[in-house]
Image 1 (cartoon, helix red, strand yellow):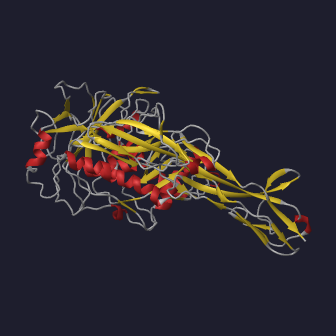
Image 2: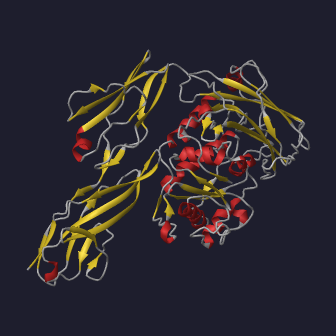
Image 3: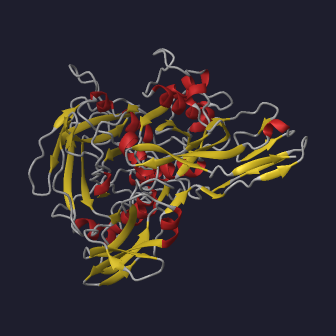
Length: 585
């Protein structure tokens, strides 16, 4: 259940899979349209369903993977839109072992991406616990990981700082990940469903993946702290105030078998093997799981889109001579198939179909299972269409800082269009930016208030089917929108100085702190609550009883916020102009 980052920061996520799961009556054949669409993917006509052993509950989470259009729509609506920012938290202070809490709007995207992937295997959605029965433990588990800069399910045993009782319990019952620099969707995929790297053979246990695909898991919680996350899974043990059965839905659909990549049409972006990494060439890790079966002697074969066998390293559960083998979780036995990174991925509207065959399965309804994984690109429309553009995330930085994340647009078009970014100042004439010909663009230079207010950017996409122009985009900056004013007051009175920070409405900035300073002997010094000065860690400083000793003092407010960037987190600092002067009479 543990993973860490070792791949190069080039999320070349790709994919493979298609699960023939029917939404309503599972004894019926798929519709003619769906079947025809799938059969068009290759000359192979056999497509098998991960038959459910129980009727499907009324849950809209299940995705018909025999339908390319349905998988594509679900991917765009539930996964791609969450490729914007990481899980976030507030109030975390690892130095004092204060866990804080995860920002709900920051962890819901992880839930949505995770449930999308469950839907590909015909599973019900997992709900986020809102009662507070689990959250303190997952949040403490994330905090203790952040405090020590590493992961452990037994932090107290390993002598971790801040290994509180809550952190110990949360770490023991959660999947853990270090996912700095990953968006919410990437966290759910890369570090929980499908992390792969030769350096960590413990990942061959597939613990994260199998816990995340537990069909009867019904309730969870997500903790987040400085790029570390913890997701509660079903271990069979209770939380204080929450019975173990509360996380379990015995009525949920339980497939006879599951796979990853899932059977059927499978977005190529969900593949995580990236080729060359810091520890050598990466590998694909495909898996096949059967309920209450024996896969100890099963044989796996994968045929590539050209009809050639894929060279496999097959790892059986409990295989002798191998230290790490797939775990048995939720009564599923799992077979792991490892092979080199897939370099040839689908382009445009094409489908690349892999046929998987598992033979020699014991104690299961069938001894042989065969299914197809049809890789495709869900960002390509199914029919020719003019370009459509939407902004993925409001670009944001701090005053005096460079922009660390690009302006990112999502373009839907077929054929693939040509791109051109433009800029203009003070509502003047738009001009092309040389070399800016991708879907993303990162303006260079330092950002000021004036530049943020008066400089705009837009993207033009041109294809044979038409032209689209995005709405103008400005780069938002964090700072102070008004400075504290000077004050003249009599001795013994009460006075306040206030500055209003610009708060980020979409959560890219978080963990904001305030620090008031006073200038003495030409040096700015931090001040603290001492009975004379009050509220020194807010945006409104108060002096309870002014004395003659306060005459001529100058004050300023320093605001610090964390900002997410591609290589981790940075801190944006803004401060007032220091001209707030106190005159006493």
